Amino acid sequence: LHPARLQSPPNLIPARFDPLSQGDRFHFPSDDVRQSRPQSDLFLARLPGSPNTGLSIPARLSQRIPSHHAKMAARGPGAPGARGMNTRFAQFKLVLLGESAVGKSSIVLRFVKDQFDSYRESTIGAAFLTQTISLDENTTVKFEIWDTAGQERYKSLAPMYYRNANCAVVVYDITQSASLDKAKAWVKELQRQANENIIIALAGNKLDLVNEQPDKRAVPTADAEAYAREAGLLFFETSAKTAENVKELFTAIAKKLPLDQAGPRHARPGQRQGVSLQPETPGSNVSGPCSC
Image 1 (tube, rainbow, N blue to C red):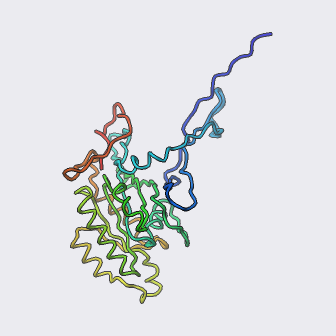
Image 2 (cartoon, rainbow, N blue to C red):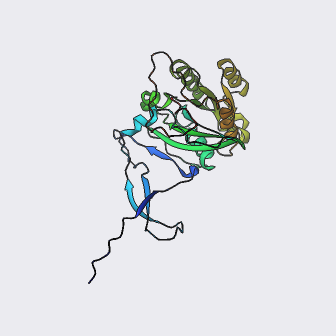
């Protein structure tokens, strides 16, 4: 009898997901609510010699460690890989801030997945998603989006998310005047503590409610627009439900970002820079990850 022939172990290949389907929601152990695990990294195994049919079997799951959440949130966007000589690709960290229930998560869901849920539970801690948009045939921008919780008990965590951010969307509800006051407070905090070159957009959400019933408007467009102009902000009134001005909001932000300067940016004096967790890529035409 001939000894059994040992088969080499299957090759592990990382599963690739479309950016539209990505999204991790992080929860904190201290919350007295039902927890859900972050999405794990899935690796697929393909047997040697088998045809590449696109069908593979799960080999193992690599669990993300929750303690990495703080490091991931505080750092800037990762370094993009090398691209063609005639194309520009840059990725930027974006954070959403605003009072609870103004529609931050709904705006992100509309932008990333082009969906709207009539009922959404309040965000716990923060949610992380990515989306890529093309400004033209040669220019692509990837947003690494941190959708933060609006409840007061999470306010102290906000600096962890807006630290090193390239851009921010501060959201208020145009049917609730108090939400604009909270938005102004967030803008003031960003201008005082975030990177000095951060691009800030003010978004008045729930425009669909006012279009249906004009008497529901509590914040006049002219007042919010005047404030945004005085504070040097981009300004849009949006509807996550109907998608009105949502794509335009993020496109305007992308056009304001320094696409030709996607390397490290300067932080305010005394402010800590982000740390890249990725090794340098040999031959890359990018000097390094953006530290904001």
